[in-house]
Amino acid sequence: MPTGSTGAAPAGHRDPAARTRHRTLRRAADRRRNPRLRRTDITVTDERVVRRAVKAAALGNAMEWFDFGIYSYLAITLGKVFFPGGNATTSLLSSFATFAVAFLVRPVGGAYFGPLGDRIGRKKVLALTMIMMALGTLCIGLIPARATIGFWAPVLLVLCRLVQGFSTGGEYGGASTFIAEYAPDKRRGYFGSFLEMGTLIGYTGAAGIVLVLDTALGPDTMLRWGWRLPFLVAGPLGLIGLYLRLRLDETPAFLRLAESRTHRATGSTAGTEAEFAHLSANAPKKKLGEIFTQQWPTLILCIALVGAYNITDYMLLSYMPTYLTDTLRYRESHGLLILLGTMIALMCLLSSVGRLNDRLGRKPLLMTGMLGFLLTSVPAFLLVKQGSVPAVIGGMALLGLCLVCLLGTMSAALPALFPTSVRYGCLAIGYNLAVSLFGGTTPLVITALLHAFDNDVMVPAYYTMAAALVGIAAVTRMKETAGQPLAGSPPSVATEAEALALVNARSTERRA
Image 1 (spheres, helix red, strand yellow):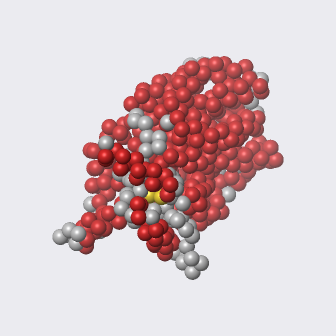
Image 2 (tube, rainbow, N blue to C red; image 1 turned 120 degrees about the vertical axis):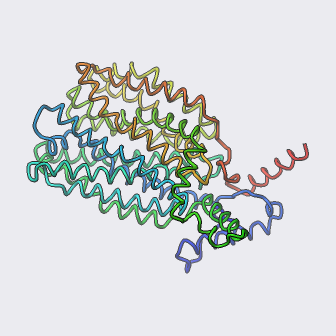
């Protein structure tokens, strides 16, 4: 029976399959020593293996979002490089429109990578998305400016953004599924929070390198060639991320699913043909059909949750530096510095929020965050509007406290909505549809609304409140999943003592 692990592989066993077989044998030996667990369908995880998997998934996620975040923090500069001419607002709108282009293909990437991850495994797909993101980001840094090659410069920029968006379509769904399927049921919130820690590390790294370069080189040098440097870092970082992901073993839940497919196939008259049916040419269409025909109510719930969450997320972490610079006339470096402080504070709180939602439940934390955005967005933006550094920090802190409730909870709540056989596909499609329609368009929509309403600086607050109302309605409809097994998977516990307690509880229920 595939499990998390109970021991390290011998020195001579380098390949993942050998390590997995070794852990399975060790787990079987443990069960022989403990007869009461021999016939149970419970996964006992090894915390060292879980932590290693979480660390690799989160660091890979950080590198992906470093690549993706660079564009948003260089939006004003890129607007001048690739969309010169006209007024500043038109240039910025063109830059944000290109930013949003990547989100248009994210659902396509999710529809491709998600079902693929449910068929061939989470690990392989996550390695592939890492390669594509690194290449797309690296190529942006190599594109000649519009002054050099004219019309082809923005065309090449859009193509690179499409590659980035397509690869990102498989990232969050795969990484969150990977961590959720490794973590024990009672600590899924805690371990899941490290995925968003990786996201914030990526964004912080992107903002940090842009801030350092802007301070060291100055605006004129950044406009000439300095903007390229953050994008060129993507190549080496991509190789590191790929190495980390290739060293991972497949998740216990997927190994169990693959084993059950094999057992069903070998025990049927279809034999070998049935065993490999999930790899046939018709398999992707069948998997997509299952997602949209059988999972559509939960898919809609996922889209509503993610849409509300991502509008608030992109408003604070992607758009706010541009808001401070373009609307409130802050220096670009000052806006980034304030955002960096906000993100570092969020990282310090994330694991605590993860532990809290394991104890109190996912719904209370999600509802707290959504209600917080509804009630504090206007006061927060009134503070930011004052313009002084303490007031801006106070407004950002209010918004950040609301956001951290969502950041530390979503990565555990969303994978639990779907069964193992379609989890990656459903989450990738639902998440990316929501991000495409609402999250990635947030900077573009807010910039356009500000222009339409004569730069009313409260427009972002009203937009955030509308998103929070949708989020509140979605949270009331979801089921509580804290401490419960993932749908389609057996219970997962951290120790054999927990497993025995669960066996005893089941025996008591049956006698009753």
